[in-house]
Image 1 (cartoon, rainbow, N blue to C red):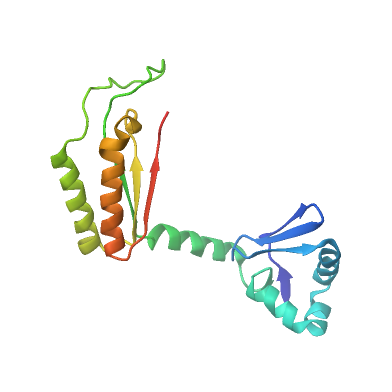
Image 2 (image 1 turned 120 degrees about the horizontal axis):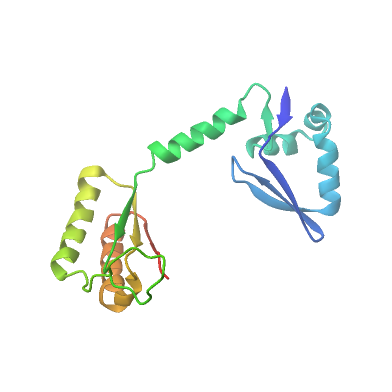
Length: 182
């Protein structure tokens, strides 16, 4: 026996309806007429399977339709566990400076003057290479933080980001970067 997934979403977008299943990530759009047809089929899954078997199987593959014995919450838990325990993307937060260009009334930092030196930059590159070799990370998310990290954008952020990107590329691994800034 089959049932519709609890994780199906249908969003009206003008003359089309977007179908999305948040377990499989499958997304597509249909015309208004196709949407009405599909919703009618979803009301009688047994007839849908018998009359339109190949289409029905696609909806099963895309997880819009699922076996009633399959616990969808367990599927979500498994996906979550995989993301938490199997994702070896390494997140490295770097403060190139504690200086800031604002003096927000709520800030508790002293905003000590100074910036990251060349020795620290070399140690960061060495550390990332070690993480690739020893920890077998699957990617690098470089997160710039600070006081105001963009104060040293051209001097530190751009060159170090490019160097770390190149190290990751040489090892066939993805590189991502982001910054928390005011």
